[in-house]
Length: 196
Image 1 (cartoon, rainbow, N blue to C red):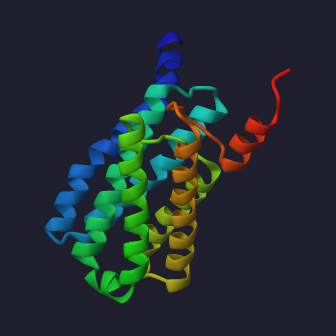
Image 2: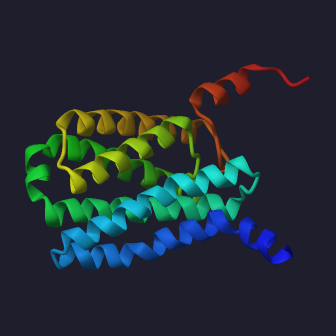
Image 3: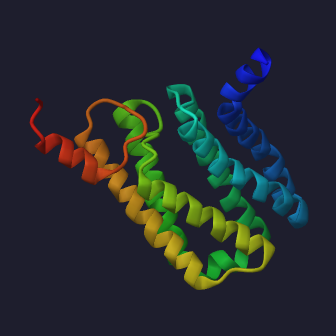
C-alpha cells in the first residue's frame, strides 16, 4: 500500500517526464514523414499535459519541481508540434503565416523575458495560459486527425497571444519567481488589498 501511495505522489511528475521523453520520438517521426506515428504519439502527449496539472492540483501534489518540469515539457512539446506542422503540413504555415508569426513571436518573447528576469521559465500556470494550452492542444490534435478549421486556429492564436501578454505583465509586476499565479487580476487585487 505504501508503494502505491508513493507512486501516486509522483504521478504528475512522471507524466511530465513521459511528455519530455516523447519529444525526441515526435521529432524523429516528423522528420521522417511518419505522420500517422507522429499523430498517435502527439495526442497522448497532449493529454498528459491536461492530466498532470489536474492530478497535481486535485490531490495536492503540486511542487516547484513539478511546475518546472511541466513548463519545460510544455515548451519542448510546443516546439516539436510546430516542427511537426512545418514538416508534415507546410501548407498550414503558408496559409496562416501571420497567425503563426504572432503566436511564435509572443511565445518566444515571453520565454526570453522569463529567462532574463528569473533565470528560468515563468511557470505561472495562469488561467489564461491553461485555456491557451488546451486550445492549442486541441487545434494541433484536430489538425493531425481531421484537418484544420481556421476558426479554431485563430481562436487558439488570439487566446495564446493574450495569455503571453498577460505573463509579460506579470513578470513586470512580480520581482521574484513563483509558480501557479492565477492571473493579472489576482496579482493586482492582492497588491491593492492592505495586509491585515
